[in-house]
Amino acid sequence: MHYLVTGGAGFVGSHVVLALRDAGHCVVVFDNLSTGHRAAVPHDVPLIVGDLSDQVLLASVLEKYSFDAVLHFAALSLVGDSMRVPFTYLRQNYLNSLNLIELCVQHGIRRFVFSSTAALFGTPEQQPIMESATINPGSPYGESKFLIERVLHWADRIHGMRSACLRYFNAAGSDPAGRAGEDHRPETHLIPLAIDTALGRRGQLAIFGSDYPTVDGTCVRDYIHVTDLANAHLAALEQIETCSVTYNVGNTTGFSNLDVIRSVERVTGQHVDWRWDARRAGDPAVLIAGSERLRRETGWVPRIASLDDIVESAYRWRLTHPDGYDSPVYSQEDCETPVP
Ligand code: UDP
Image (cartoon, rainbow, N blue to C red; front, side, top):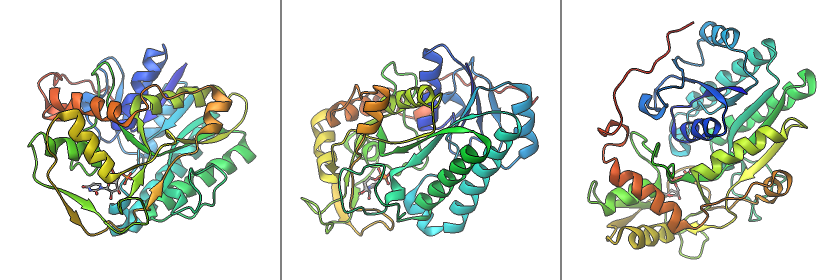
C-alpha cells in the first residue's frame, strides 16, 4: 500500500512511518519541519518539505502519488500553548485539516487516519474514558481536534471517506530498535524532562499543580509506548476497510506526576530534583483511556505496557542521543525529495 504521512518527521508520525515500512508499505512524508526533524525520516522515505496551508503543493503531491490512504499528524499539539494563543491553534489545526480532507476527497482518497487526542474530553467524571464519554474540550487544542473529527464524520457521510480517529493519551518512549525517539524543542513533556533532570542536563523540574483531586494532588495520565501507539494505526487502517472508527488509545492505567518521577528515579538510578509550581492552564486532573473497543475490534494489544519499561525506552534514547536528532549518529545527509 502507498501512504501519505503528514507530520511524519514528528514524534508520533516518525514512529508510524517506521511501523508502516516495517510492515512493507510505501510511505511519503509531508512535513514543514517546524517541530519535526529531517533526520527522523528514514533516508529512503521521500520527504516533501512543505506546509499544509500550501494547497497547490499538496494537490501536486496527491496527484503525483496514488495514495491508498492519508495518515494525518501535522498539527500544533501543546495544550498549554493553545491556552495562550487559542486562535492560532483553532485556525491552523482546523483549516489545514479541513483543506487536506477536502483535497483527499477531490483526489479520490477514501481512507484517512487522524491523530486525535484525549484532550477533547476535558475533565470527564468517569474514568477510564470510553469513546462514548461526553466531549467537552478543556483547551483550544482539544477543541481543534474535535472539530476535525466532525469534518471526518461528514466526509464519510457525504463522500464515503472512511476514517479512523485515534484519540491518543500520553505517548512516550522510543523505537525499540533505536531508530527514532522524542525530541521536542523546547521539550515540554514530563517524561523526557524528568529524564534530562535526572541526567543533570537541565535544572530543577517544576511540577504543575499540587491540589488536583487525585491521590497525591498531581495530575494523573495514561502513558502509552509510542510504538504501541504506532501499531494502533496499522490496526485502524485494516479496520477502516469496513467502516469508520473512533478509538481511545492508552494502557488503561493512570500514573500521577509523582509516580512518573519515582519511575524515572528507579530506571535511571538518579535523583530527580523537582519543586512545586502553579497549575498549567488547560490541564485536566485525570485522563485514563478505556481502550477496550480498540482491543476488541482489532486485536491490538500494547506490548510495552509498564511505566518503567516506557520510561526505560525513553531513557535509552536520551542516553545514546544527548542532542536528540542532532546527535552524530544521524547523518546530516539531505533526504528531501524535490517538489514534484
Ligand atoms: N508536567 C509538569 N511539569 C512539566 C511538564 C509537565 O508537571 O515540566 C505535567 C503536566 O502539567 C501534566 C503532566 O505532567 O499534568 C503530563 O504533561 P505532558 O506535557 O507530558 O503531556 P500532556 O498531558 O499535556 O499531553
